[in-house]
Image 1 (cartoon, rainbow, N blue to C red):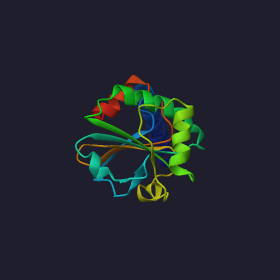
Image 2 (cartoon, rainbow, N blue to C red):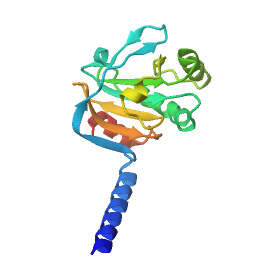
Image 3 (tube, one colour):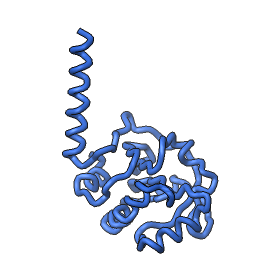
Image 4 (cartoon, helix red, strand yellow):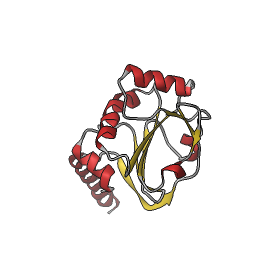
Length: 172
C-alpha cells in the first residue's frame, strides 16, 4: 500500500513539473497565503537608502542577484528587456545586488552588459537574503501592490517568455 501511495505521489509531482514547464512559469511558487515582506533597506546608485514601502501601490519584482553568480548574470539582460516592456507606474523591478563591492560592482556590470532599464541597487550589509529567507541567488519575489509576497522563484529565469511575463503582470 505504501509503495502505491509513493508511486502516485511521484507521478503527481512529475505531472506538476511538466505542467510548470509547459506554462513557462517554471520555478515560480505561489505564496499561499500571501504574506508581508519583512522590512529591509538597500541603496541606490547614489548611496541613498530605500525600502519597499516606497514602491507600494505597484507590483514589485524583487530580484536578489550578484555579478559573480552565473545564472544571475545570464538572466539580467532578459530582466532588463522585461523592464522595457512593463509599465513603470504599475510595476517596479528592483534588482538588488548582493556583491562585496556592492554598487560599484553592479554599476560596472550594468554598463558592460547594456543594462539600461533597471536602476542600480545594492544591499551593502548582505541582509536581504537572510531577512527574506532566500536559499540562494538569484531569488525573485513577486510582491503585490499591498506589499504582500504572492510568489517566489528560486533560481534563474528566462524573463522573455510570454507566459512568465504574464505571470508577473497578473500573478497567475
